[in-house]
Length: 308
Image 1 (cartoon, helix red, strand yellow):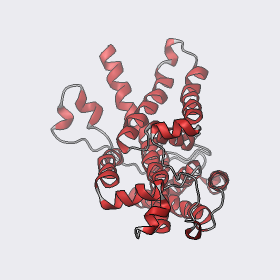
Image 2: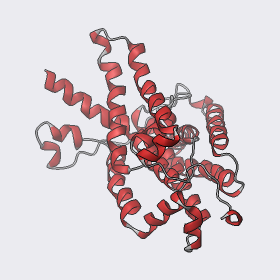
Image 3: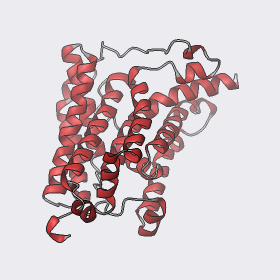
Image 4: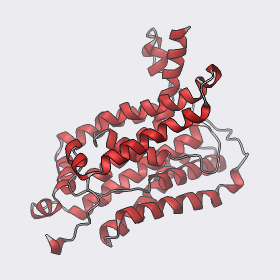
């Protein structure tokens, strides 16, 4: 009985953490390049409403997911233009992006409230692996987006730490003037990383409305974007640790529902992810702590070539 409970909870934690994993992987790249994007919540919610609306209108789940990713990427480019080209305050720009995304999604999504999504992304069990005792059903009986998010972890880790492109990303986030002097296009690298962050955040939002629920609920991200920001710090800007952190948060979310019948206060359970988020954000924003956990040195600092 206990093993069945654990297995069911672990299996449910993976899809619950998948939107967070997508968002965190993208934010890691944005921040590694030196750009802090607090607009993750806005990009995710726009991805959610776009994915749901396009899928409902066309009947094509993959088209909805693709356009949701592009919606997140386009919003990210707004932040990139403001913070990289115009050198606006990155915190203010990101917060404005979140408010814009929440407001716009609420307006666009009014027509979808209460409308079920008849098109689904089917579960795709992996042959042979799904039959492994205990682990098979937990790890290898999910939808394709779960597998994609997991495959992105080693891929993005390899690019970031084992390729020349990754060296450029990290150097731009650590010492943009030095990288510029060595011939790295600081502005292009930052634009690409912020755009990638938006694309992955849009994917995370689409997963919520097209796969995980599937339905449109106004404000359905419910703070997921802020959890992504905390997870980026928790992961110490490494894709591998992001996988662990995302699934931990997914497990907490699942436990909110599974522990309620045992008499645990649902209000307390609902607070746990955000308490952890606040603790991580407070710990990670101190200058000494940021250096200790390996935050990019030029994070949130605009770069101007004439000032190098």
